[in-house]
Image (tube, rainbow over all chains, first blue to last red; front, side):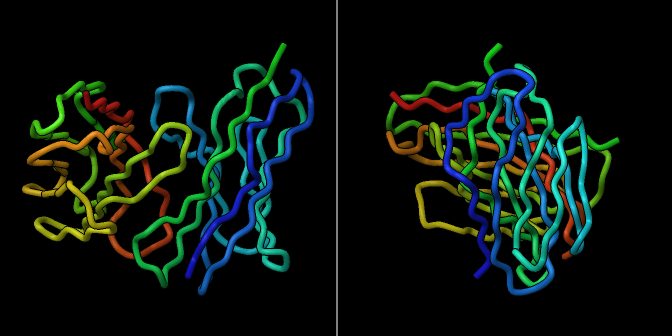
Length: 113
Length: 114
């Protein structure tokens, strides 16, 4: 079945450091891929998405490229800020699986000044 | 634009008491609706999803039930809460149909069982 695996956290970085959060997936069809961000005490917000191979999603300085050959969708940011501290979730939606989403377990990021 | 509302934001309930959490969506018709639970420091567990009025699919056996009495209203209920029902409950919606559309989340309800 479909699944998403993302790197274990927590991740702690200094401000302006480079961020990578790894995400790989397994899907039976042609999934769309998403990154969500959850700030403390809040719901999840859609950060970016990609709907087909080689698409690059980007938002707020974050980027992720849909790599079909490596079944990956790694999240990157060139220079993190304290305000980026949150939990990040990778997710996929596959038409074959209908209306369901498959979420990774989340990666907690803390950025220190 | 579309918005999703969840309430209450926080709730403290004794073991054995009933539960009703409500979620409503505005600005869209016939959305797919979802209830998730997030235990402390953990990922998301899909509890229920609905593709239409009175059409509910349950993902895991549990002490909870869901209902969709109106197109844009989704209710999570329990007759008798257990300690293990504590957690952060999230409602979400996506556009109708089977397309690979993003889900959009409410602000969540933090439920504590004493």
